[in-house]
Length: 249
Image (cartoon, rainbow, N blue to C red; front, side):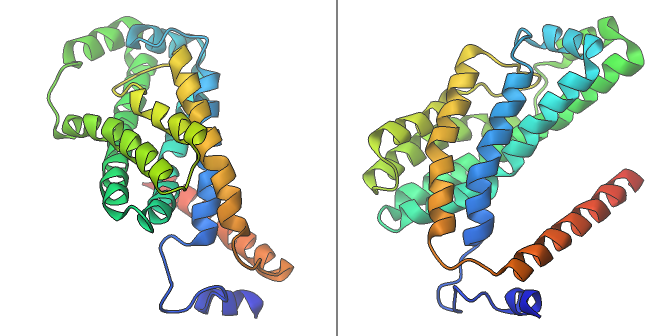
């Protein structure tokens, strides 16, 4: 019954102060997404970041590389609730900065997700066609035009704008705002591995967002044990169903 009531009406909100994605989704995203992002980078840091070496690493360590890239892209996708939550906090005092910064970063997250699809296909080429043919195919098509490439620059400017807005609005202090802004210099593109600066940027993202996530989660009442248990069951059941549906497709 408690879960049913929670589904129909959140006790911490009214119709007038509802916001998307909400305190729980936003707060959890602020904590989990940067960690997954950083783990993905750490798992592949032993390999050179340019694409021939990334393909070679996949041939020699397929499970490790697939795990690394999956952690990275799941962290990237799960950042969208975190960015919406951050922009909401910034927007209370600096609405225009929040609007442009949040829009640019989310557009950039779409671009990274697009690149992840190309990465997956490239790794399958290694498995099916062999390393030499896969490397030649990627090399010959590396500069091919696609409309998504126009979004590559948005995420760079977006992180810088959000970093400035987070400081000016008082959402983050100077150190954590600068740490957030480091993400603006993170490389974009197909089969980009991990450099030393990639680790620095992802660590900065963790320093900026994780404490903010705990702050968001603590800003209001907590649901009861039964409600939490019910949500866990719903999430696990939904995730399992979506997994098998995805495999069937």
